[in-house]
Image (cartoon, rainbow, N blue to C red; front, side, top):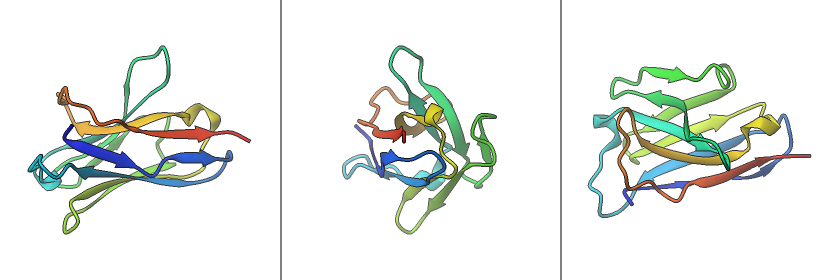
Length: 117
């Protein structure tokens, strides 16, 4: 496991959450040198890319989250964030971070986001 995701939880529709992605202590990964993607997966479906941030901090988002989700990076702390606003029930999933493209095989455990009233 080279990353650790956190910050998920249960939130009502319209609410917000901020997810964090940290490099595991032994990985030696420095996020600012890579393009990092946030992915999500629901049971029975393939993992999908939510958005990404390049080493130059160029950001791209899936159409389904554009305007609601924002990816950012804190270089001194070596963290990547996913700010999620105006959450919808269809955003319910386990969220992961990993390299993009070509994610590493050793995915983190992810963090569960549940959007429900």
